[in-house]
Length: 128
Image (cartoon, rainbow, N blue to C red; front, side):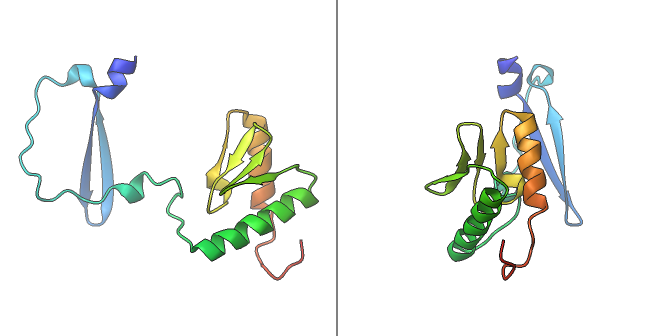
């Protein structure tokens, strides 16, 4: 199984501003020829962990504080560990601290925390 994944090719096409990805499993590839390498696009935005959400360091700090306050108010024992918010060893929330930056192997905990985050008041002037 591991060999199947690491020997596969993903072909990216771009047309009219839309990006398409095609997956070719390794065992089906007999040969490959690279015709041009002059037009290699910046793919970082496709695979970024932020899900396309960019923010300044100050804004990320503000989001982290607001999220921590919200989770504590909802009796979630969250703690800060550098740039990561942690719920024991069960869940991590990375910058910029939105629903898409929650990581956990426990689906129940993950879905409940994501629901809490999505229900957090949007306005920063609301005292949560």
